[in-house]
Image 1 (tube, rainbow, N blue to C red):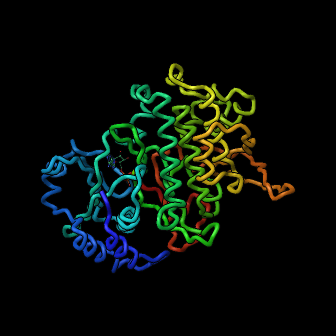
Image 2: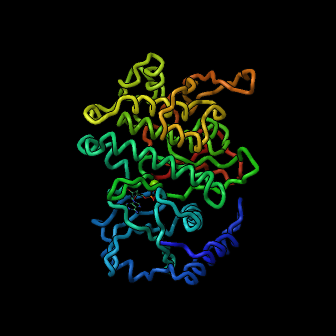
Length: 394
Ligand SMILES: Nc1ncnc2c1ncn2[C@@H]1O[C@H](COP(=O)(O)OP(=O)(O)O)[C@@H](O)[C@H]1O
Ligand SMILES: [Mg+2]
């Protein structure tokens, strides 16, 4: 499906980076939807979802439920419904609508349109047949469906989607909430990055911005959690966590409860890598399908992405190259970062940097990675303490 140019231009007009005005944005949504005929009537969505029947519910996110539906023309859709009470939700909802309308890529979920009905606000997406990755990867009876070939392609697809967001889309977009429940898998197991509620447009001439901390426990880069220091490297970090989760079949955030010898999945993978025994972290379900050299290389790349020092983490273009080729000379990863850890950068001659990190506790911000944190601060600068973080449902 192509998105007409004037549709994009209309979206560009009202959107301003760091815009704090909320009022006009809501009208914009209706206008844009009307102009571009992307508006769905509430009745259509009611009928498609059987009056938002509980059995049609696909998931419950931070600001409202998502329902499965079927349009009269046979198309399957997913409808995200904003809880009318949530103010923060309204912002994120608009954010998602605007950013998603601007992007189109094989590895990004397709937004079909919108609906406003009184206080109700709804986003309509193409239904993605195998739903979200967390529903398979973290379920012991379903994980076996994901053999190595699938996981390999999922990792490469997510990397391509992120490369597009960071570099190839109209402007640099940082997703900020890359995690298993925000990756959808279609009928051919092609991954689609979803949930752009927290995504940010990023000024091209800056290396980082300071922002409110919002993200999910277990996936957030330490410099972002601690200092609100946001750059594309925060997404790279989350991507690295996801790579290690896909290979091990384990959630980073709940990992420490099951293993005494390591404080986090990252720590565990790093220690095994250093002993040249990284294959031991592999999900036993992969035993029959794994190509061991590929698995080892992907663990290595996952560790490069999750280094404590953001400057040592590779950018997405390099990651995509590393994943698709057989890299021979990969640099050794520095220590992984975890929330609560500090990193110290020692400058090497030639401008290369290395990391001397200290491991913090993986559970610093709670035990479940299904939680999204969002700072309640109204300023643009993040505070690092847990008390400044407001917890919202997944
Ligand atoms: N297009 C879709 N197709 C299939 N399942 C979806 C789709 N969109 C969302 N879901 C399901 O609903 C969940 C929540 O949706 P998401 O877009 O992540 O919103 P939230 O902000 O509520 O987390 C997802 O984790 C996924 O399981
Ligand atoms: Mg989500």
